[in-house]
Image (cartoon, rainbow, N blue to C red; front, side):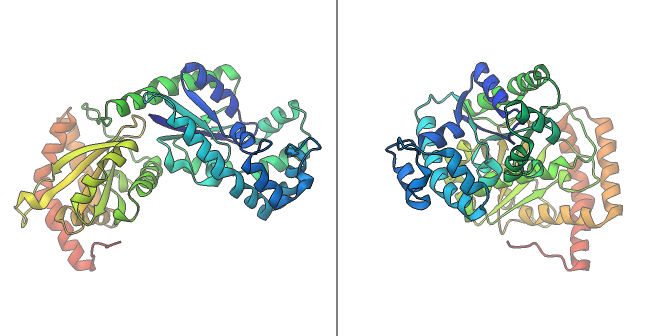
Length: 396
């Protein structure tokens, strides 16, 4: 099933988005509601809180006095960390129980205010941040009855907008009226969330567009790579010797197709096959493939890899799993580093790409047409550059 994380600072409009996603068909799990559930009267969670903070955090009826507890933890980062160490694992466990009880084709949205703070984003297929200007958030909190000082204290106790953007795939701006926010949510649901869920159900990755389109360098490519890399590290751990952003989107200033290429280096391709199910659960599907042999390495078996793609239609990525001793693994890193370092080579390659893009309308034909240039220019010149500059493929 598709698992989506929804976050946002207090007063940003996260609850409004959660409500609309539920109306569209998502199963919403509210972390705040679960955080109250796991410390309800007669729970093991409440006993742990009382053990740490004392019986003064209880009401006369034996329930948690949340206002009293907030006074303690808001002014003490260590105390807040201790409370989170009690509550967060229990909330996650309860969320897993709920998720496991849902049908396989469910779209699950977990409303997690502290997503950035708790480092949970890589565990989700998609992370959404709802954002609004600070002053607008303060106005909304004032309308709820919070005085400005208390509202500022609550905002500053949470992660910054920049921190949330860093871990999220989508930023929903809630800087207009509610109707504009609803329009943006509906568009996200139709164009990304539903197709993503369908790809997962059908165990397929999102294909690159067959109609060729080169675009100028996008700073978001590096950000998109980092999100995939974080998810892959979570799935594979140390079995992924290294994860690198490669290809044209990894070279600043180089036009490229809007597809992020990622190389995952492994000791053996058998490791990738062992992780196939876990990769599928994370939204990556693939097959056995081969790179085109280069001069000096004519044996096609040396160029075997595992080619995977992401099921996310909003962040199309190609994953190239290569063994650490494969010539293709070295060449992917060398070609990237050569183009990054050599402005003339970068300009020449950009010219080649532009000329072929003007000639071919098909991505497949364009890709095939570049191969002679790699054999004639790319491979020998990159290797000469490596010798001249003492470049070696990093091992980790």
